[in-house]
Length: 401
Image (spheres, rainbow, N blue to C red):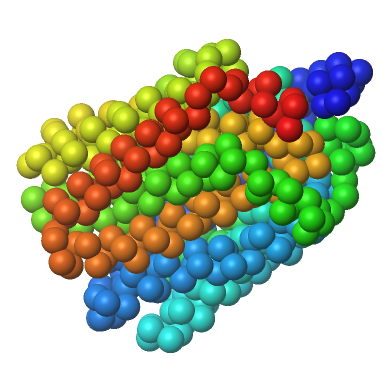
């Protein structure tokens, strides 16, 4: 039915006005998150006990994990814009409060507040974005979105270190980032209201639809694979700085700059092939590459080796992340696309909760070598799961779902 419906409706251009404006909004939103590159070291400067730092970092994602499924059931392309604005204003307030929180309990409260408003903002943005994507361009669309959402991780860490030297404190940097969020509001106002069509229905999701949706074995396997990728990704984000400093590399921000530049290059140069090649096989290959990179990371001893590995990580992440979102989109019925795409970001937050929580424990017990070997194993398992999904093309499966 979906295929015939798609045939009756005109094709939506890839770079339509709503898609472009929402992509710009997501870029600014992720600038908000990229400044937390040095948050672990900031907690150390506050004399926060080491066994509490992982919890303080991870509680943000735990909050998002708790609320996102319920928010996702209510939000759709038609009501997402106003809730996006509420999330922006709430996130601004939370970022301004970081400077007043110096205890474990105070920081946990601020992180919960920030996590709650952030997930509202992010979920609303995704719900609106899904209404602007045509299935025939899903691979390219999520590839471009991924470019705009990772650019902050390339440019913000070096800029944050420069800005931190000019500002009086790290909380001042967070407050400045929060004020930047206000720029998103006029962008949202210019987004056209979506039409209620077969491809972008504007109704809330019911519990029965959620239950039926999760009976799709391919969907569940894909979400498990995504978690096995995002947990290692978050450990790199939070622990590479301390790992690098331990071997005498002072500025690990360049690792992310090189890795992200590589990700961007992969998505721009090869993005047109994302909808032509088997997406599950591309994802499996990317995970195998990441597993190898994590293993080699245990052997690196200097900046040169880190930067070479940054290129390899960038290749893996550059392919894997848009493939997860594109396959999710392709597997979903039209009425479940916003929910399932947000479910993918739910798994992403799950990775950012488990990553620092498990990572801090592994580093404390086995060191960084044990941490990166565990990450290699997770990526390898994810690749095996995707290779076990034999004989089905995601796009055809989505059409018949």
